[in-house]
Image (cartoon, one colour):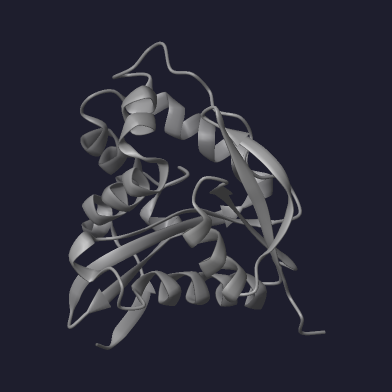
Length: 187
């Protein structure tokens, strides 16, 4: 099964929304965006300058069919991107809880990655992670970061296999997460 990765377009907004929902979990997505979280996340993905914007996303395809998505951005832009995302969410969920900071300046943050169920186990997630990590390093980012729930050792093993190492702990939606970094080894 051949996997290709390309920059996302506005037409990919629903796939991006599904990937983000998978990454944060449906329970957190409901708390964050309300019951219609997929529609809200899709609206965010359609907008420029948001965390989950199509501009900050890549799509994996298998046989020309979208199979998953990844969102990533410069951690220094977290507040700006999050505020625009929250302004959309507040239309549907005025009492939104602002999540803890999951990234910071000095790192390119892989915010969300998700693979559609029918394509899991075929290297789609690996292709997405490798492509966006390589692009971030090529664009001059020395550190590429992500967080993973400490209760998800399988995902942590995947990230470690791809060169990510534990660099600390972050809290996100009440979950203890490993903060993991991939360092650019090219001088």
